[in-house]
Length: 72
Image (cartoon, rainbow, N blue to C red):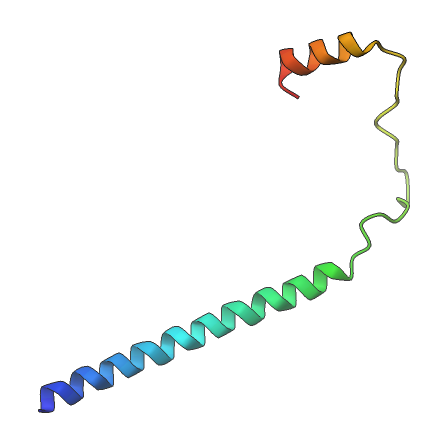
């Protein structure tokens, strides 16, 4: 009977530790999500930002060729 209570006690300890760690992980992820939701990704860049993409008049066949060749 004592062995049963010892096993039950260990099982409850492990369950409490697992639940605590799960809650800590869950609320940590929620805090990180709230932090990143406040960041405006589509604001105009500040400082010495440079536009890196300029559309050139290329034919569609040339673009498809580059796409299939380089795997972009």
